[in-house]
Figure 1 (cartoon, rainbow, N blue to C red):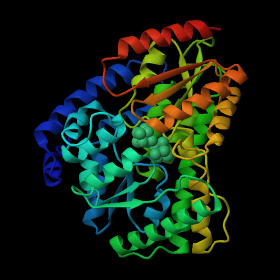
Figure 2: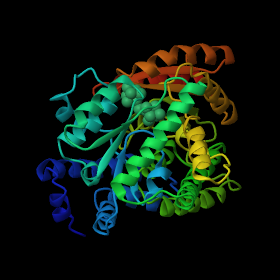
Figure 3: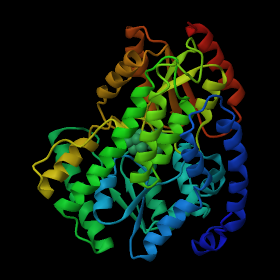
Length: 424
Ligand code: BJ8
C-alpha cells in the first residue's frame, strides 16, 4: 500500500482528524456498495476511485501542481469545468456530503444552515479534505443565500472567487452570466498565466461533452426493466465524475455501459422486475451522501434516475454549436450552463417539466422529492412539484433530512409505507 502521509502533511491536513475520516469510509463503503448482488464487474474501477479518493487522485493533482499547473475547487455545476481546463488547470468538485465535517462548520456557521453548505465549509476549517487544500483557489457562485454568505467566510480561509449567477433567465440575466464567464476567463488567465484560446477551449469542451455523453448513456440504460444497475452505483459514478480525470473517467463509464448493454438481452437485472422504480428529485447528493438511496434500495425499491445536480442537471446538457470563435464558444457555454434547472431560479417551471418527462420515460412508480433541511429554494419549489405530479397521477413522497443518522429509522418507515402504496 502506498503511504500518502507526507503528501497529506504537505497539504496541511489535520492528520489526526483525517485518520478518523479514513477509518470510517471503508467500512461504510463495504457495507453499502460491496454487499450488493449482481454488480457489474466494471464497477471495480469506481470502487478503486473511491478507495483512492485521498490517495492516487490527489497525488495526480499534486504532480500537476509540481509541473506548474493549477487546481481549482468548485461547489456548483454552474461553474464551467471546460473554461478552467482551457487555462491548463484541473477543476475538482469539492466534497460536501458528510456529517463528519459539520461539527467544525458549526463552530462558525449557524446550525440552521443546509448540511451541504456546512459540510463543505467544515472540510476547509477542519483541514480534512485534501482537494480543498490542494486547490490554488476556489470558485463560489451566488446561487442560494446560504452559499453566497458562506463564501464570504470561506474567503477568510482560502482564496475564493465568487461568480454571479442570475436569478432569472431573462435576456438581462443571460447577459450578466456571459459577462461573469468573461470575468472568470480573465481570472483564470491571471492565475494560471496561460491564455485561453479558441483551440484550448474547444478541446476542453469536447472532453466535458464526452464525459456528459457517457453519463447520459448510463442514464438511458437505467430505462431497462429489470434495472441493470443499482441507483447507488449509478449515483456513485456521477459523484466520482466531479473529481476524477475526465478522459479516464469517460472511458470507464463507457466500458460500464458496454457491460450493461450486454445484460439487456439476458435480462440480468440487479433487482426483480417488479421492484418499485423510483425517481429521486431535489437537492444534490454530494459524495459520500448515499443515505436516501441506501434506504430506498434497502427497502426493496430501485432508483432509476436522479433529477439533481448529482444526476441529470449535471449531464443532460451538451454544448450547442458555436461559430468557433472564442466569443461564440463562451456564448455557447453560457447557454449550456443556463439550461441547469436549479431551484435558485425564478420561475423554474422547466424543472417540473423535467421531472414529469423523467417519470414517464423511465417508467417510474413514484417520485421521492429529496430536500436538505434548511434549503428553502427546493422546499418551496416542492409545493409546485407536488401539484404538478398530482395532476399527472404520479405518486410523490416528500423527504426533508440532513446528513445525520437520527432520522434514519423514521425515514425507513415512511419509505416502506410509500413503497407499499405504489407496489406493482
Ligand atoms: S445548480 S442545486 S449545485 S446551487 S441544497 S446549497 S441550493 S441550501 S446545492 Fe446546488 Fe448549484 Fe443549484 Fe445545483 Fe443552497 Fe439548497 Fe443547500 Fe444547495
